[in-house]
Amino acid sequence: MQHRLLKWFHQNKRDLPWRTNPSWYKTFLSEIILQQTTVAQGLPYYQKFIQQYPDIKSLAKADEQSVLHLWAGLGYYSRARNMLKAARIIYTEHDGVFPQDYKTALALPGIGPYSAAAILSISYNLPHAVIDGNVIRVICRLYAIKEDTREKNTLNRIKKHATKLLDKKAPGDFNEAMMELGATTCTPRQPLCQSCPINRFCIAYKKNLVIKIPYKSKPAKKKKLINLVGVIKNKSQICIMRRPDSGLLAGMWEFPILEIRDWDNLDIHYDRFKSRFELTGQLGIISEEMRQIYSHIDLRFKGIILNTAKKSIHKNDYVDVKWVDFSELKNYAIHNAHKKIIAWLADQ
DNA sequence: AATGCGGGGAT
DNA sequence: ATCCCAGCATT
Image (cartoon, rainbow, N blue to C red; front, side, top):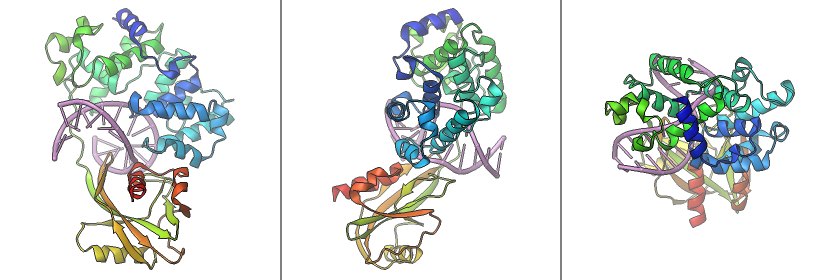
C-alpha cells in the first residue's frame, strides 16, 4: 500500500512553491497558511509572505500590523498573530530553528497536533502521522468507517490507522501523499476512484460506500447579525477604528459599526449610531445590503455615509482611531466585509 | 465536549 | 438557497 501511494505521489504531486528548494521555514509558513484553507486560496498569500519575509529573522522582527495587513482577506486572523508569536519564540529561544521534537513544537502558539506532525515529518523526517481533513476522508474510506468524524472516538480510531500505516522510512512523503490523494483524487464529492493508486485496498470502494463516507454531523446554525456600517467623513477624511486584540477579527481595522435588529426605523438607528459615537452630522447615502458569512455568524450589513464637521469621536470598545484619505485605506489591515464597503465607496 | 474563529467554491 | 471544505485555542 505505502509503496503504491508513494510512487503515485512522486509521479503526480502538484508543483507548489514550498516544494522547490524546501526548508523548514517554507514548510512552517505554508502549513500555517493552509490551515482551514485550500491551496488555491492560500497560494497568493504564501507568495506575498515568502517575498516580504524570506526567513525566520525577517518574520520575527516584523510588527503585528504589517503581518495582519499582508494577511488581510485570508481570514482566521489569530493564525497570523500566532505565527508571528511563534516566529519570535523560534528566533529568540530556539536559535532561529524550528524545534525538532513534538512536545516543544506543540508548545508554540498556533501549532497544534496537525501542524506539529506536518512540519516535523516533512522537514525532519520524524515519524508523526498527520491527521487533517484529507487524511480523515482517505482513512474513513479505506476502512469504511461510518461513524461521525466530529466524535473524539472516531478520530482516535483514525489516528490509530494513520499511525499504523505511516511509512517510517519516509514519513514526510507519506503524509504529503495521503493529503495529496485526499485533495486531488479521494475528494469529497466526485472522487476519482478509477485512478486511485490504492483503490484495491479501499473497503468503501469495494462496498460501493465511497460517497456515503465520511459522515460528519451538522454544525450548529449560524447566528444572524445585522450591522450598520458608518462611513464617517470629515471633508476628505474617513474614520477607521481598530478592533480589540481578542474576539472576532481581532486587531483588524474597520469602519465603526452599530449592531441592529432589523432595517426598520432607520432614523432611530441613525440617531443611535450618532449618540454611540458622540457625533453630530448629516446622513448621506446608504448602500444596498451586503453579506459576509463567517464560521459561526451570518452577517448582513449596509454602509451609510455620515458627514461630520468635527473629528472628535468616541472609541467605544475600539482600541485605536484614525482619520485617513480614501486612498490610504489600502495601507490598513481591513477585513473582507469592510473591503466590500470600500468597493462600494469606490463606485460612488 | 462545545464553542469561537473567515473565507470561498460547487451544486 | 444550501450544500461543502479546512485546525487551533479557549471554555
